[in-house]
Amino acid sequence: MCGIVGYIGSNMAAPILINGLKKLEYRGYDSAGVAIFEDNDLKVIKSKGRLAILEEKVNKDMPKGLIGIGHTRWATHGEPNDLNSHPHISHSGKIAVVHNGIIENYIELKEFLQSEGYKFVSETDTEVVAHLIDYHYKGDIVEAVIESINEVEGSYALGVICKDCDDKFVAARKDSPLVVGLGKNENFIASDIPAILEYTRDVYILEDKEVVVLSSDNVKVFNNHGAEVKKEIFKVNWDVSAAEKSGYEHFMMKEMFEEPKVIRDTISPRIKDGSISLDNINITSEDLEKIEKIYIVACGTAYHAGVVGKYVIEKLARIPVEVDVASEFRYRDPLITNKNLVIIISQSGETLDTLFALREAKKKGARVLSIVNVVGSSISRESDDVLYTWAGPEIAVASTKAYNTQLSALYLVAMDFAMKKGHIEEGFYKKFIEDLKNIPQVIESVLANKEVIQRFASEHYNAKSIFFIGRGLDYALSMEGSLKLKEISYIHSEAYAGGELKHGTIALIEEGTLVICPMTQDNLMDKMISNIREVKARGATVLAITKESNQQVEKVADVVVTIPDVDSLIAPIAAVTPLQLFAYYMAIQKGCDVDKPRNLAKSVTVE
Ligand code: M6R
Image (cartoon, rainbow, N blue to C red; front, side):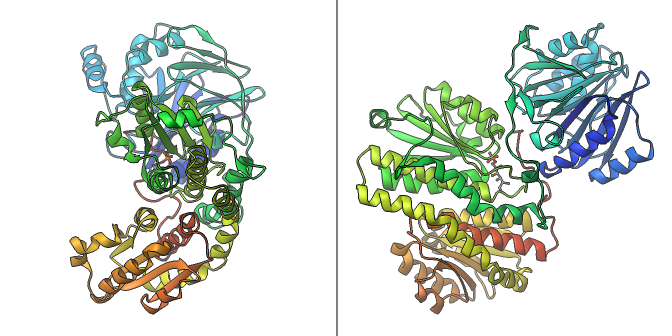
Protein backbone atom coordinates (compact mmCIF):
# COMPACT_ATOMS: atom_id res chain seq x y z
CA MET A 1 0.00 0.00 0.00
CA CYS A 2 1.10 3.63 -0.25
CA GLY A 3 4.16 4.79 1.67
CA ILE A 4 4.99 8.19 3.17
CA VAL A 5 8.28 9.73 4.25
CA GLY A 6 8.85 13.31 5.36
CA TYR A 7 11.99 15.14 6.45
CA ILE A 8 13.11 18.43 7.99
CA GLY A 9 16.66 19.10 9.15
CA SER A 10 20.04 20.33 8.08
CA ASN A 11 20.59 17.83 5.25
CA MET A 12 19.22 17.84 1.74
CA ALA A 13 15.77 16.27 1.95
CA ALA A 14 15.57 14.58 -1.46
CA PRO A 15 18.17 11.80 -0.98
CA ILE A 16 16.75 11.02 2.49
CA LEU A 17 13.24 10.79 1.06
CA ILE A 18 14.33 8.50 -1.79
CA ASN A 19 16.27 6.34 0.63
CA GLY A 20 13.25 6.10 2.93
CA LEU A 21 10.88 5.31 0.06
CA LYS A 22 13.19 2.49 -1.01
CA LYS A 23 12.66 0.92 2.41
CA LEU A 24 8.91 1.11 1.80
CA GLU A 25 8.99 -0.42 -1.68
CA TYR A 26 7.89 -3.75 -0.22
CA ARG A 27 4.52 -2.23 0.67
CA GLY A 28 3.58 -2.26 -3.02
CA TYR A 29 3.21 0.80 -5.26
CA ASP A 30 2.85 1.85 -8.87
CA SER A 31 4.12 5.44 -8.89
CA ALA A 32 6.21 7.69 -6.68
CA GLY A 33 7.02 11.34 -6.05
CA VAL A 34 8.61 13.94 -3.82
CA ALA A 35 7.94 17.61 -3.03
CA ILE A 36 10.78 19.74 -1.70
CA PHE A 37 10.66 23.22 -0.22
CA GLU A 38 13.33 25.11 -2.14
CA ASP A 39 13.97 28.84 -2.68
CA ASN A 40 10.58 29.71 -1.20
CA ASP A 41 8.88 27.47 -3.69
CA LEU A 42 7.68 23.86 -3.88
CA LYS A 43 9.52 21.65 -6.29
CA VAL A 44 7.61 18.52 -7.24
CA ILE A 45 9.11 15.54 -9.05
CA LYS A 46 7.03 12.42 -9.70
CA SER A 47 6.75 9.51 -12.02
CA LYS A 48 4.82 6.39 -12.84
CA GLY A 49 6.47 3.01 -12.28
CA ARG A 50 9.44 1.97 -10.22
CA LEU A 51 11.20 4.19 -7.71
CA ALA A 52 14.39 3.89 -9.74
CA ILE A 53 12.75 6.09 -12.42
CA LEU A 54 11.96 8.77 -9.87
CA GLU A 55 15.46 8.52 -8.43
CA GLU A 56 16.96 9.08 -11.86
CA LYS A 57 14.79 12.17 -12.37
CA VAL A 58 15.72 13.53 -8.93
CA ASN A 59 19.44 12.89 -9.50
CA LYS A 60 19.35 14.77 -12.81
CA ASP A 61 18.08 17.91 -11.15
CA MET A 62 18.76 17.42 -7.45
CA PRO A 63 16.66 19.78 -5.28
CA LYS A 64 18.78 21.34 -2.54
CA GLY A 65 15.93 22.04 -0.07
CA LEU A 66 15.99 20.85 3.55
CA ILE A 67 12.27 20.13 3.93
CA GLY A 68 10.40 17.54 1.91
CA ILE A 69 7.72 14.89 1.66
CA GLY A 70 7.80 11.73 -0.45
CA HIS A 71 5.29 9.10 -1.42
CA THR A 72 4.89 5.73 -3.11
CA ARG A 73 1.35 5.35 -4.45
CA TRP A 74 -0.73 2.21 -4.77
CA ALA A 75 -3.58 3.34 -7.02
CA THR A 76 -7.11 3.45 -5.63
CA HIS A 77 -8.77 6.51 -7.24
CA GLY A 78 -7.47 6.94 -10.78
CA GLU A 79 -4.98 4.90 -12.75
CA PRO A 80 -1.26 4.94 -11.98
CA ASN A 81 0.17 7.85 -13.99
CA ASP A 82 2.29 10.94 -13.40
CA LEU A 83 -0.76 13.13 -12.85
CA ASN A 84 -2.41 10.94 -10.24
CA SER A 85 0.79 10.26 -8.34
CA HIS A 86 1.56 12.21 -5.16
CA PRO A 87 2.49 14.82 -3.98
CA HIS A 88 -0.52 16.89 -5.07
CA ILE A 89 -0.27 20.64 -5.25
CA SER A 90 -3.11 22.99 -4.35
CA HIS A 91 -4.73 25.41 -6.73
CA SER A 92 -2.60 28.36 -5.59
CA GLY A 93 0.60 26.30 -5.70
CA LYS A 94 1.06 26.94 -1.97
CA ILE A 95 0.36 23.54 -0.48
CA ALA A 96 1.82 20.11 -1.31
CA VAL A 97 0.24 16.98 0.13
CA VAL A 98 1.02 13.27 0.29
CA HIS A 99 -1.73 10.98 1.51
CA ASN A 100 -2.30 7.34 2.41
CA GLY A 101 -5.86 6.12 2.84
CA ILE A 102 -9.17 7.03 1.23
CA ILE A 103 -11.17 10.24 1.58
CA GLU A 104 -14.73 8.97 1.52
CA ASN A 105 -16.54 12.31 1.13
CA TYR A 106 -14.19 13.55 -1.59
CA ILE A 107 -16.95 13.98 -4.17
CA GLU A 108 -18.94 16.40 -1.97
CA LEU A 109 -15.77 18.26 -1.03
CA LYS A 110 -14.67 18.40 -4.66
CA GLU A 111 -18.03 19.85 -5.74
CA PHE A 112 -17.81 22.45 -3.01
CA LEU A 113 -14.24 23.40 -3.90
CA GLN A 114 -15.09 23.54 -7.60
CA SER A 115 -17.92 25.93 -6.78
CA GLU A 116 -15.28 28.06 -5.06
CA GLY A 117 -13.24 28.11 -8.26
CA TYR A 118 -10.74 25.34 -7.53
CA LYS A 119 -9.58 23.46 -10.65
CA PHE A 120 -8.77 19.76 -10.36
CA VAL A 121 -6.16 18.10 -12.53
CA SER A 122 -6.12 14.52 -11.22
CA GLU A 123 -8.69 11.80 -10.60
CA THR A 124 -7.55 11.28 -7.01
CA ASP A 125 -9.29 11.82 -3.71
CA THR A 126 -6.04 13.27 -2.35
CA GLU A 127 -6.12 16.35 -4.53
CA VAL A 128 -9.23 17.41 -2.59
CA VAL A 129 -7.14 17.55 0.59
CA ALA A 130 -4.53 19.81 -1.01
CA HIS A 131 -7.22 22.25 -2.18
CA LEU A 132 -9.14 22.05 1.09
CA ILE A 133 -6.06 22.97 3.12
CA ASP A 134 -5.41 25.76 0.64
CA TYR A 135 -9.02 26.95 1.08
CA HIS A 136 -8.64 27.09 4.87
CA TYR A 137 -5.15 28.56 4.78
CA LYS A 138 -5.19 32.12 6.08
CA GLY A 139 -1.55 32.30 7.09
CA ASP A 140 -1.49 29.50 9.69
CA ILE A 141 -0.79 26.09 8.14
CA VAL A 142 -1.47 24.17 11.36
CA GLU A 143 -4.92 25.72 11.70
CA ALA A 144 -5.65 25.00 8.05
CA VAL A 145 -4.74 21.32 8.46
CA ILE A 146 -6.84 21.00 11.62
CA GLU A 147 -9.87 22.62 9.96
CA SER A 148 -9.45 20.34 6.96
CA ILE A 149 -9.17 17.08 8.87
CA ASN A 150 -12.31 18.01 10.75
CA GLU A 151 -14.12 18.10 7.41
CA VAL A 152 -12.80 15.01 5.71
CA GLU A 153 -14.31 11.58 6.26
CA GLY A 154 -12.39 8.37 5.73
CA SER A 155 -8.85 7.38 6.47
CA TYR A 156 -5.68 9.36 6.09
CA ALA A 157 -2.02 9.71 6.89
CA LEU A 158 -0.99 13.10 5.58
CA GLY A 159 2.25 14.95 5.05
CA VAL A 160 1.84 18.65 4.21
CA ILE A 161 4.39 21.28 3.23
CA CYS A 162 3.59 24.92 2.59
CA LYS A 163 5.36 27.41 0.37
CA ASP A 164 5.16 30.07 3.10
CA CYS A 165 6.82 27.91 5.74
CA ASP A 166 10.58 27.62 5.62
CA ASP A 167 10.90 26.20 9.13
CA LYS A 168 8.24 23.54 9.51
CA PHE A 169 5.91 21.01 7.97
CA VAL A 170 2.76 19.31 9.21
CA ALA A 171 1.38 15.77 9.31
CA ALA A 172 -1.79 14.10 10.57
CA ARG A 173 -3.39 10.69 10.70
CA LYS A 174 -6.64 8.78 11.12
CA ASP A 175 -7.03 5.02 10.52
CA SER A 176 -3.83 4.92 8.49
CA PRO A 177 -0.46 4.49 10.22
CA LEU A 178 2.02 7.32 10.67
CA VAL A 179 4.96 7.68 13.02
CA VAL A 180 7.17 10.64 13.83
CA GLY A 181 10.91 9.96 13.96
CA LEU A 182 12.82 12.09 16.47
CA GLY A 183 16.37 12.86 15.38
CA LYS A 184 19.12 15.27 16.42
CA ASN A 185 18.50 18.55 14.60
CA GLU A 186 16.30 16.65 12.21
CA ASN A 187 12.88 15.05 12.38
CA PHE A 188 10.92 12.68 10.20
CA ILE A 189 7.54 11.23 9.45
CA ALA A 190 6.97 7.78 7.99
CA SER A 191 4.09 5.45 7.35
CA ASP A 192 6.29 2.58 8.48
CA ILE A 193 9.32 2.45 10.78
CA PRO A 194 11.89 0.85 8.37
CA ALA A 195 11.84 4.07 6.31
CA ILE A 196 13.54 6.05 9.08
CA LEU A 197 15.26 3.37 11.14
CA GLU A 198 18.63 4.29 9.70
CA TYR A 199 18.31 7.74 11.27
CA THR A 200 16.51 7.23 14.55
CA ARG A 201 15.01 4.67 16.92
CA ASP A 202 12.94 7.17 18.89
CA VAL A 203 9.44 7.59 17.56
CA TYR A 204 6.07 9.01 18.46
CA ILE A 205 3.17 6.86 17.36
CA LEU A 206 0.36 9.17 16.35
CA GLU A 207 -3.21 8.50 17.44
CA ASP A 208 -6.26 9.13 15.30
CA LYS A 209 -6.88 12.79 14.44
CA GLU A 210 -3.59 13.96 15.88
CA VAL A 211 -1.72 16.66 14.03
CA VAL A 212 2.03 17.05 14.32
CA VAL A 213 4.14 20.09 13.53
CA LEU A 214 7.79 19.33 12.82
CA SER A 215 10.70 21.73 12.71
CA SER A 216 14.33 20.63 12.68
CA ASP A 217 14.72 20.94 16.46
CA ASN A 218 11.17 20.58 17.73
CA VAL A 219 8.09 18.40 17.38
CA LYS A 220 4.66 19.34 18.72
CA VAL A 221 1.56 17.20 18.61
CA PHE A 222 -2.00 18.57 18.79
CA ASN A 223 -5.45 17.03 18.82
CA ASN A 224 -8.04 18.02 16.24
CA HIS A 225 -9.27 20.86 18.52
CA GLY A 226 -5.83 22.44 18.58
CA ALA A 227 -4.90 21.41 22.14
CA GLU A 228 -1.33 20.20 22.62
CA VAL A 229 -0.91 16.48 23.40
CA LYS A 230 1.97 15.04 25.42
CA LYS A 231 3.46 12.00 23.68
CA GLU A 232 5.63 9.21 24.99
CA ILE A 233 8.72 8.19 23.06
CA PHE A 234 8.53 4.64 21.74
CA LYS A 235 11.96 3.01 21.36
CA VAL A 236 12.29 0.73 18.36
CA ASN A 237 14.32 -2.23 19.51
CA TRP A 238 14.82 -4.17 16.32
CA ASP A 239 17.88 -3.97 14.20
CA VAL A 240 18.26 -2.32 10.80
CA SER A 241 19.50 -5.66 9.46
CA ALA A 242 16.12 -7.18 10.35
CA ALA A 243 14.72 -5.11 7.50
CA GLU A 244 17.49 -6.07 5.05
CA LYS A 245 18.08 -9.16 2.92
CA SER A 246 21.33 -10.18 4.65
CA GLY A 247 22.70 -12.15 1.70
CA TYR A 248 19.46 -13.88 0.70
CA GLU A 249 18.23 -13.29 -2.81
CA HIS A 250 14.74 -12.44 -1.60
CA PHE A 251 13.15 -11.31 1.63
CA MET A 252 10.69 -14.18 1.31
CA MET A 253 13.48 -16.78 1.44
CA LYS A 254 15.20 -14.95 4.29
CA GLU A 255 11.94 -14.85 6.22
CA MET A 256 11.28 -18.57 5.70
CA PHE A 257 14.76 -19.27 7.07
CA GLU A 258 13.91 -17.14 10.10
CA GLU A 259 10.93 -19.33 10.97
CA PRO A 260 12.71 -21.57 13.51
CA LYS A 261 14.07 -18.54 15.37
CA VAL A 262 10.86 -16.53 15.44
CA ILE A 263 8.80 -19.52 16.58
CA ARG A 264 11.25 -19.97 19.45
CA ASP A 265 11.02 -16.24 20.23
CA THR A 266 7.23 -16.47 20.29
CA ILE A 267 6.96 -19.61 22.38
CA SER A 268 9.91 -19.62 24.83
CA PRO A 269 9.15 -16.47 26.86
CA ARG A 270 5.63 -17.80 27.43
CA ILE A 271 6.69 -21.08 28.95
CA LYS A 272 7.69 -20.70 32.56
CA ASP A 273 8.48 -23.72 34.76
CA GLY A 274 6.83 -26.00 32.23
CA SER A 275 3.57 -24.02 32.14
CA ILE A 276 2.09 -21.54 29.69
CA SER A 277 1.97 -17.94 30.83
CA LEU A 278 0.43 -15.52 28.36
CA ASP A 279 2.22 -12.26 29.19
CA ASN A 280 -0.12 -10.04 31.17
CA ILE A 281 -3.25 -11.47 29.67
CA ASN A 282 -5.48 -12.36 32.51
CA ILE A 283 -8.31 -14.42 31.11
CA THR A 284 -9.29 -16.48 34.14
CA SER A 285 -11.20 -19.76 34.41
CA GLU A 286 -14.20 -17.71 35.56
CA ASP A 287 -13.91 -15.46 32.49
CA LEU A 288 -13.74 -18.53 30.27
CA GLU A 289 -16.86 -20.00 31.88
CA LYS A 290 -18.78 -16.92 30.76
CA ILE A 291 -17.54 -17.08 27.16
CA GLU A 292 -20.21 -18.74 25.03
CA LYS A 293 -18.38 -18.44 21.76
CA ILE A 294 -15.09 -17.16 20.37
CA TYR A 295 -14.87 -15.29 17.09
CA ILE A 296 -11.57 -15.20 15.24
CA VAL A 297 -11.42 -12.34 12.76
CA ALA A 298 -8.64 -11.58 10.26
CA CYS A 299 -7.75 -11.26 6.56
CA GLY A 300 -5.70 -13.31 4.10
CA THR A 301 -2.96 -15.40 5.65
CA ALA A 302 -3.92 -14.28 9.14
CA TYR A 303 -7.45 -15.55 8.43
CA HIS A 304 -6.00 -18.91 7.41
CA ALA A 305 -4.11 -19.01 10.71
CA GLY A 306 -7.50 -18.36 12.32
CA VAL A 307 -8.98 -21.42 10.60
CA VAL A 308 -6.28 -23.55 12.24
CA GLY A 309 -7.04 -21.72 15.50
CA LYS A 310 -10.71 -22.74 15.27
CA TYR A 311 -9.87 -26.45 14.96
CA VAL A 312 -7.36 -26.31 17.78
CA ILE A 313 -9.34 -24.21 20.28
CA GLU A 314 -12.49 -26.26 19.72
CA LYS A 315 -10.60 -29.51 20.04
CA LEU A 316 -8.62 -28.61 23.14
CA ALA A 317 -10.67 -26.01 25.01
CA ARG A 318 -14.11 -27.18 23.82
CA ILE A 319 -15.34 -23.63 23.20
CA PRO A 320 -17.26 -23.03 19.94
CA VAL A 321 -15.27 -20.88 17.54
CA GLU A 322 -16.42 -19.03 14.43
CA VAL A 323 -13.79 -17.70 12.02
CA ASP A 324 -14.61 -14.66 9.95
CA VAL A 325 -13.06 -12.67 7.16
CA ALA A 326 -12.80 -9.18 8.65
CA SER A 327 -14.34 -7.35 5.69
CA GLU A 328 -17.45 -9.54 5.95
CA PHE A 329 -17.65 -9.58 9.75
CA ARG A 330 -17.96 -5.85 10.19
CA TYR A 331 -20.84 -5.46 7.78
CA ARG A 332 -22.94 -8.46 8.77
CA ASP A 333 -24.14 -7.16 12.10
CA PRO A 334 -22.50 -10.07 13.94
CA LEU A 335 -24.26 -11.49 16.99
CA ILE A 336 -21.64 -10.30 19.43
CA THR A 337 -22.21 -9.63 23.12
CA ASN A 338 -20.12 -9.42 26.25
CA LYS A 339 -20.31 -13.22 26.35
CA ASN A 340 -17.97 -13.44 23.39
CA LEU A 341 -14.24 -13.23 23.10
CA VAL A 342 -13.01 -11.88 19.78
CA ILE A 343 -9.51 -12.91 18.70
CA ILE A 344 -8.10 -10.56 16.09
CA ILE A 345 -5.07 -11.73 14.09
CA SER A 346 -2.88 -9.37 12.10
CA GLN A 347 0.79 -9.23 11.18
CA SER A 348 0.85 -5.49 10.47
CA GLY A 349 -1.72 -4.50 13.06
CA GLU A 350 -2.90 -1.91 10.55
CA THR A 351 -5.15 -3.83 8.14
CA LEU A 352 -8.13 -1.52 7.90
CA ASP A 353 -10.83 -4.18 7.56
CA THR A 354 -9.44 -5.97 10.61
CA LEU A 355 -9.14 -2.77 12.61
CA PHE A 356 -12.75 -1.85 11.87
CA ALA A 357 -13.89 -5.37 12.75
CA LEU A 358 -12.13 -4.95 16.10
CA ARG A 359 -14.00 -1.69 16.70
CA GLU A 360 -17.30 -3.34 15.80
CA ALA A 361 -16.60 -6.14 18.30
CA LYS A 362 -15.68 -3.70 21.06
CA LYS A 363 -18.73 -1.55 20.35
CA LYS A 364 -20.88 -4.62 20.94
CA GLY A 365 -19.24 -5.32 24.27
CA ALA A 366 -16.87 -8.19 23.45
CA ARG A 367 -13.43 -8.54 24.97
CA VAL A 368 -10.79 -8.36 22.24
CA LEU A 369 -7.58 -10.35 22.35
CA SER A 370 -5.23 -9.57 19.48
CA ILE A 371 -2.43 -11.65 18.05
CA VAL A 372 -0.29 -8.99 16.42
CA ASN A 373 3.26 -8.68 15.13
CA VAL A 374 3.87 -4.93 15.01
CA VAL A 375 4.32 -3.38 18.44
CA GLY A 376 2.45 -0.11 18.83
CA SER A 377 0.24 -0.72 15.78
CA SER A 378 -3.36 0.49 15.77
CA ILE A 379 -4.80 -2.97 16.44
CA SER A 380 -2.45 -3.59 19.34
CA ARG A 381 -3.32 -0.25 20.89
CA GLU A 382 -7.08 -0.68 20.62
CA SER A 383 -7.28 -4.25 21.93
CA ASP A 384 -8.04 -5.27 25.51
CA ASP A 385 -5.27 -7.88 25.48
CA VAL A 386 -2.36 -8.33 23.10
CA LEU A 387 -0.24 -11.37 22.47
CA TYR A 388 2.66 -10.33 20.26
CA THR A 389 4.06 -12.72 17.68
CA TRP A 390 7.75 -12.00 17.84
CA ALA A 391 8.34 -12.49 14.10
CA GLY A 392 10.32 -9.27 13.62
CA PRO A 393 9.74 -7.13 10.53
CA GLU A 394 8.17 -9.07 7.68
CA ILE A 395 9.05 -7.33 4.44
CA ALA A 396 8.04 -9.75 1.66
CA VAL A 397 4.43 -9.16 0.65
CA ALA A 398 3.78 -12.89 0.94
CA SER A 399 3.43 -13.63 4.61
CA THR A 400 5.49 -16.62 5.79
CA LYS A 401 7.16 -16.41 9.19
CA ALA A 402 4.29 -14.33 10.56
CA TYR A 403 1.90 -17.23 9.84
CA ASN A 404 4.03 -19.75 11.76
CA THR A 405 4.17 -17.41 14.74
CA GLN A 406 0.42 -16.73 14.56
CA LEU A 407 -0.12 -20.47 14.76
CA SER A 408 2.33 -20.73 17.66
CA ALA A 409 0.41 -18.03 19.54
CA LEU A 410 -2.93 -19.70 18.81
CA TYR A 411 -1.66 -23.04 20.14
CA LEU A 412 -0.54 -21.34 23.34
CA VAL A 413 -3.95 -19.69 23.72
CA ALA A 414 -5.79 -22.97 23.01
CA MET A 415 -3.68 -24.89 25.53
CA ASP A 416 -3.98 -22.20 28.17
CA PHE A 417 -7.78 -22.11 27.80
CA ALA A 418 -8.00 -25.92 27.71
CA MET A 419 -6.04 -26.25 30.95
CA LYS A 420 -8.07 -23.53 32.66
CA LYS A 421 -11.29 -25.19 31.59
CA GLY A 422 -10.05 -28.52 32.88
CA HIS A 423 -10.42 -30.31 29.58
CA ILE A 424 -6.93 -31.79 29.39
CA GLU A 425 -4.69 -33.86 31.59
CA GLU A 426 -1.43 -32.58 33.01
CA GLY A 427 0.55 -35.26 31.09
CA PHE A 428 -0.94 -34.25 27.75
CA TYR A 429 -0.30 -30.58 28.54
CA LYS A 430 3.37 -31.17 29.35
CA LYS A 431 3.94 -33.31 26.28
CA PHE A 432 2.23 -30.79 24.04
CA ILE A 433 4.48 -28.01 25.35
CA GLU A 434 7.55 -30.17 24.66
CA ASP A 435 6.30 -30.92 21.11
CA LEU A 436 5.71 -27.23 20.49
CA LYS A 437 9.23 -26.37 21.67
CA ASN A 438 10.55 -28.97 19.24
CA ILE A 439 8.88 -27.40 16.17
CA PRO A 440 11.83 -25.10 15.26
CA GLN A 441 14.07 -28.17 14.74
CA VAL A 442 11.41 -29.77 12.59
CA ILE A 443 11.33 -26.69 10.35
CA GLU A 444 15.12 -26.57 10.19
CA SER A 445 15.05 -30.06 8.75
CA VAL A 446 12.32 -29.10 6.23
CA LEU A 447 14.41 -26.13 5.07
CA ALA A 448 17.50 -28.31 4.76
CA ASN A 449 15.62 -30.47 2.24
CA LYS A 450 14.24 -27.63 0.17
CA GLU A 451 15.85 -28.97 -3.04
CA VAL A 452 13.16 -31.66 -3.41
CA ILE A 453 10.56 -28.94 -3.73
CA GLN A 454 12.79 -26.81 -5.92
CA ARG A 455 13.19 -29.73 -8.35
CA PHE A 456 9.47 -30.43 -8.40
CA ALA A 457 8.75 -26.74 -9.11
CA SER A 458 11.27 -26.70 -11.95
CA GLU A 459 9.34 -29.54 -13.60
CA HIS A 460 5.86 -28.10 -13.09
CA TYR A 461 6.06 -24.32 -13.21
CA ASN A 462 4.11 -24.20 -16.45
CA ALA A 463 0.97 -25.51 -14.73
CA LYS A 464 -2.08 -23.41 -15.51
CA SER A 465 -4.16 -24.45 -12.56
CA ILE A 466 -3.28 -26.27 -9.34
CA PHE A 467 -5.52 -27.82 -6.68
CA PHE A 468 -4.72 -28.11 -3.00
CA ILE A 469 -6.71 -30.68 -1.07
CA GLY A 470 -6.61 -31.63 2.57
CA ARG A 471 -8.78 -32.73 5.45
CA GLY A 472 -9.13 -31.22 8.91
CA LEU A 473 -6.11 -29.08 9.73
CA ASP A 474 -4.67 -29.99 6.34
CA TYR A 475 -7.66 -28.27 4.72
CA ALA A 476 -6.74 -25.09 6.60
CA LEU A 477 -3.16 -25.55 5.38
CA SER A 478 -4.36 -26.07 1.82
CA MET A 479 -6.03 -22.66 1.85
CA GLU A 480 -2.79 -21.03 2.87
CA GLY A 481 -0.75 -23.01 0.32
CA SER A 482 -3.12 -21.99 -2.42
CA LEU A 483 -3.10 -18.30 -1.47
CA LYS A 484 0.71 -18.25 -1.35
CA LEU A 485 0.96 -19.80 -4.80
CA LYS A 486 -1.60 -17.44 -6.35
CA GLU A 487 -0.21 -14.24 -4.93
CA ILE A 488 3.41 -14.69 -5.98
CA SER A 489 3.37 -17.02 -9.00
CA TYR A 490 0.05 -15.83 -10.55
CA ILE A 491 -0.96 -19.46 -11.14
CA HIS A 492 -4.64 -20.09 -10.63
CA SER A 493 -5.28 -22.45 -7.79
CA GLU A 494 -8.03 -23.59 -5.48
CA ALA A 495 -8.11 -25.18 -2.07
CA TYR A 496 -10.69 -27.85 -1.36
CA ALA A 497 -11.61 -30.04 1.54
CA GLY A 498 -10.56 -33.52 0.42
CA GLY A 499 -14.04 -34.90 0.84
CA GLU A 500 -15.72 -32.03 -0.99
CA LEU A 501 -13.86 -32.42 -4.27
CA LYS A 502 -16.20 -35.08 -5.59
CA HIS A 503 -19.16 -32.70 -5.18
CA GLY A 504 -18.20 -30.72 -8.25
CA THR A 505 -14.59 -29.65 -8.55
CA ILE A 506 -13.34 -33.09 -9.52
CA ALA A 507 -14.81 -32.32 -12.96
CA LEU A 508 -11.78 -30.04 -13.48
CA ILE A 509 -9.21 -32.77 -12.88
CA GLU A 510 -7.76 -34.06 -16.12
CA GLU A 511 -4.55 -35.61 -17.44
CA GLY A 512 -1.58 -33.82 -15.84
CA THR A 513 -3.54 -31.57 -13.44
CA LEU A 514 -1.34 -30.88 -10.43
CA VAL A 515 -2.84 -31.68 -7.02
CA ILE A 516 -0.96 -30.82 -3.82
CA CYS A 517 -1.97 -32.79 -0.73
CA PRO A 518 -0.85 -31.87 2.76
CA MET A 519 -1.39 -35.11 4.73
CA THR A 520 -0.38 -34.66 8.34
CA GLN A 521 -3.53 -35.82 10.13
CA ASP A 522 -3.10 -39.43 11.20
CA ASN A 523 -6.81 -40.04 11.77
CA LEU A 524 -7.66 -38.87 8.24
CA MET A 525 -4.86 -40.65 6.39
CA ASP A 526 -7.01 -43.42 4.86
CA LYS A 527 -9.62 -40.93 3.71
CA MET A 528 -6.98 -38.77 2.04
CA ILE A 529 -5.44 -41.79 0.35
CA SER A 530 -8.86 -42.50 -1.15
CA ASN A 531 -9.08 -38.88 -2.34
CA ILE A 532 -5.67 -39.19 -3.97
CA ARG A 533 -6.78 -42.36 -5.74
CA GLU A 534 -9.84 -40.49 -7.04
CA VAL A 535 -7.77 -37.70 -8.62
CA LYS A 536 -5.06 -40.07 -9.84
CA ALA A 537 -7.74 -42.13 -11.61
CA ARG A 538 -8.54 -38.98 -13.59
CA GLY A 539 -4.94 -38.32 -14.58
CA ALA A 540 -3.72 -35.96 -11.82
CA THR A 541 -0.08 -35.66 -10.78
CA VAL A 542 0.09 -35.61 -6.98
CA LEU A 543 2.61 -34.03 -4.63
CA ALA A 544 2.00 -35.10 -1.03
CA ILE A 545 3.45 -33.53 2.10
CA THR A 546 3.40 -35.93 4.99
CA LYS A 547 5.23 -37.18 8.06
CA GLU A 548 8.23 -39.49 7.63
CA SER A 549 6.50 -42.50 9.14
CA ASN A 550 3.53 -42.33 6.74
CA GLN A 551 5.18 -44.58 4.19
CA GLN A 552 1.90 -45.72 2.67
CA VAL A 553 1.60 -42.28 1.01
CA GLU A 554 4.51 -43.14 -1.29
CA LYS A 555 2.40 -45.86 -2.87
CA VAL A 556 -0.21 -43.41 -4.13
CA ALA A 557 1.44 -39.99 -4.63
CA ASP A 558 3.85 -39.19 -7.48
CA VAL A 559 6.22 -37.20 -5.28
CA VAL A 560 6.35 -37.15 -1.47
CA VAL A 561 7.90 -34.42 0.64
CA THR A 562 8.35 -35.52 4.24
CA ILE A 563 8.55 -33.63 7.48
CA PRO A 564 9.87 -35.24 10.67
CA ASP A 565 7.22 -36.96 12.77
CA VAL A 566 5.29 -34.51 14.95
CA ASP A 567 1.96 -34.66 16.72
CA SER A 568 -0.82 -34.18 14.13
CA LEU A 569 -2.33 -31.33 16.10
CA ILE A 570 0.73 -29.11 15.76
CA ALA A 571 1.93 -30.39 12.37
CA PRO A 572 0.56 -27.34 10.45
CA ILE A 573 3.23 -25.04 11.95
CA ALA A 574 5.89 -27.12 10.20
CA ALA A 575 3.94 -28.45 7.21
CA VAL A 576 3.23 -24.95 5.91
CA THR A 577 6.92 -24.40 5.17
CA PRO A 578 7.05 -26.83 2.20
CA LEU A 579 3.96 -25.09 0.80
CA GLN A 580 5.64 -21.70 1.13
CA LEU A 581 8.78 -23.09 -0.53
CA PHE A 582 6.68 -24.54 -3.34
CA ALA A 583 5.05 -21.15 -4.04
CA TYR A 584 8.46 -19.48 -3.88
CA TYR A 585 10.16 -21.82 -6.35
CA MET A 586 7.21 -21.79 -8.76
CA ALA A 587 7.34 -17.98 -8.77
CA ILE A 588 11.12 -17.94 -9.26
CA GLN A 589 10.87 -20.38 -12.18
CA LYS A 590 8.28 -18.13 -13.78
CA GLY A 591 10.50 -15.09 -13.34
CA CYS A 592 8.05 -13.30 -11.02
CA ASP A 593 9.00 -10.54 -8.63
CA VAL A 594 8.62 -12.71 -5.52
CA ASP A 595 8.90 -9.99 -2.89
CA LYS A 596 6.72 -7.48 -4.68
CA PRO A 597 3.95 -9.33 -6.50
CA ARG A 598 1.82 -7.32 -8.90
CA ASN A 599 -1.24 -5.47 -7.59
CA LEU A 600 -0.53 -6.40 -3.99
CA ALA A 601 0.47 -4.41 -0.96
CA LYS A 602 2.04 -5.54 2.29
CA SER A 603 -0.24 -3.71 4.60
CA VAL A 604 -3.75 -3.12 3.29
CA THR A 605 -4.86 0.14 4.84
CA VAL A 606 -7.85 0.74 2.56
CA GLU A 607 -11.15 -1.12 2.46
O1 M6R B 1 -1.13 -7.51 8.23
P1 M6R B 1 -2.22 -8.51 8.21
O2 M6R B 1 -1.82 -9.81 8.81
O3 M6R B 1 -3.49 -7.99 8.84
O4 M6R B 1 -2.52 -8.77 6.68
C1 M6R B 1 -3.57 -9.59 6.27
C2 M6R B 1 -3.44 -9.92 4.80
O5 M6R B 1 -3.49 -8.77 4.03
C3 M6R B 1 -2.14 -10.67 4.49
O6 M6R B 1 -2.02 -11.83 5.25
C4 M6R B 1 -2.08 -11.05 3.00
O7 M6R B 1 -3.07 -11.99 2.70
C5 M6R B 1 -0.69 -11.57 2.64
N1 M6R B 1 -0.22 -10.95 1.44
C6 M6R B 1 -0.67 -13.03 2.40
O8 M6R B 1 0.61 -13.48 2.09
